[in-house]
Image 1 (cartoon, rainbow, N blue to C red):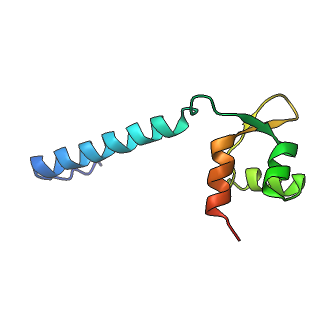
Image 2: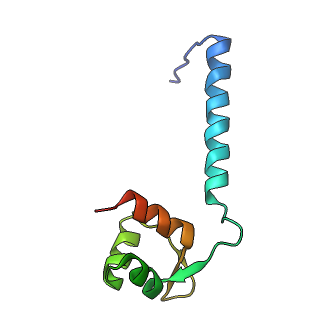
Image 3: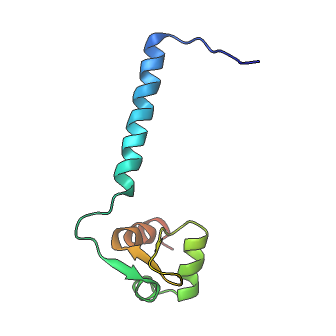
Amino acid sequence: MQTAILIDRSEWERLTETVRRLEERDRLRDQPIPNDVVLNVHQVANQLNITEETVRRARREGRLTGFKINEKEYGFWQHEVVRYLNRYKR
């Protein structure tokens, strides 16, 4: 059994516009910033003044966004490190 929900056309247009804006924002967010620098775990740890294990833990828990460089190493965009620093300032 399927359920149908009836909504006004104006409400439907507003919702589809909201979804379109959110999808566009996600698409732009995932693109690297031109001339951005890629840092490894050691460089990020030095910049944030924390241990390398803390950097790895932050990446595993989703607080710091990184990407795989090879089988063992992760890279981090400089703008993501700055975002982490601004968000998790102690």
